Amino acid sequence: MKLTVGAKIGAGYAVALIIIAVLGVAAYRNASGYVEAVQQRAHDYQMIDNLTATLSTMQDAETGQRGYLIVGADRYLTPYTEASVNAYKELQNLKVLVGNDAEQQQKLDQLHSLIDAKFEELKETIALRQDKGFEAAEQVVQTDKGKKTMDDIRAVIADMTRNAKATLDQRDVDLNVKSNAAIHTIVYGVPLACIVLALLGLVIVRKITHELRDGITRLASSASEILATTTQLASSVVQTATAVSETTATVEEVKQTAQLTTEKARYVLDSAQKASNVSTVGRTAVDDTVQGMHRIQAQMESVADSIVRLSEQSQAIGEIIATVNGLAEQSNLLAVNAAIEATKAGEQGKGFGVVAQEIKSLADQSKQATAQVRTILGDIQKATSAAVLATEQGSKAVEAGVKQTGDTGDSIRLLADNITEAAQAATQIAASSQQQMVGMDQVVVAMESIKQASTQNVAGTRQAEEAAKNLHQLGLRLGDLIGSQRAAV
View 1: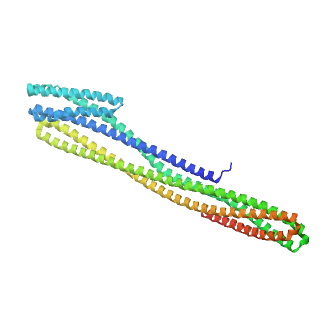
View 2: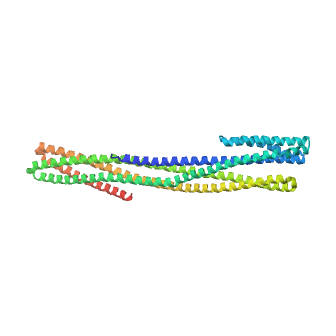
View 3: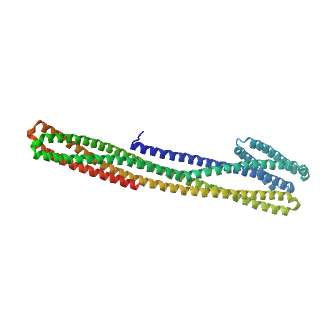
């Protein structure tokens, strides 16, 4: 099935919209997946931080209990009092963070029971120290009931931390996959779409130009035939004016020639009208194409804005990581101070020194994890910068396409104006030919007015000859225009 010019341009525009839609959907899905993965990673880090804080709180509670048992002063109970409140707040936060994870929920319930048992043991020893003295409290401590409970708490927290870190590792894999997919979609999809659209536009322009060239060739051929016919008609009319004896034969020949001229004029008129209609449709289609290219440009700018916002979010994550790193350094400093205090305490501070060493180890691990996350975030920011650069290059290519489409629209508008002039000339030819036919009928009916009719025929033939020359020249100009446009393409 042969498509019209408007249908071809519309089909090209539809293909462009489909390509842009596919790229937009792919970019949106990848960006959404990336944001979701980042949020899930933040959730896992929050889980690990809360577990670490819970263990630190229980160690603070145990530290306050030991200090009170040794010294007997109420001021040493401050860490224990604060820990008894903070521990349950942290358990509540962990319950929210665990969510629907059945395994973690089970371990959290176990941890809650162990913390309750530990606070009962701490409360019992503190009460004995208050009521019966150090020896009574010491006997309860020497049963190792509190130590076993604390060891169980550490074990449960370690298991939950391992599970959270395993989940975090899987999140990192998913995040890398989604970020790579987003980068590939932008880096390869946008240039491929530009190439496809450029090739499609080239094919459509060449096809339309070929069809217009064929029409102009037919128009030039008809104009040449009309010119030859009108020249012959002029010669016949002059001979008729000088030789009345040959009037009848000459009039018959002129009549036949006029009929042929009329048919050619009508054919030219129809061709010119069709060409004018086609040029009008082409002008409208080019205007629609320009508008579509502008919309494509706006969508490219929207994609660039989305990537910039993603970069800003990555910077916000970097600030959070800096905060976590600061907390790790503070914990390390506290561990060093605690170790110094334990050394000052001598034999009685050995247990406190072990706790300080564990706090220092946890702080070092937090700093290492923060450094790894900062490295990963740096890679993400580099990839985002590369995506922004590629998007800007795509926007420049779209701007060049908009300019080229506008130039093509101007050429087609000029072509439409020339075709309109050709249609007007064809109308004049048809009118002149009709006048010739009327004159020929009058000559046949009334031979006495042959001289006057011959004179009218001479004038009409000269006008037709001039119009044919103009039409022929117009066809040549249109051919040159299409040829130059093709060369430019």
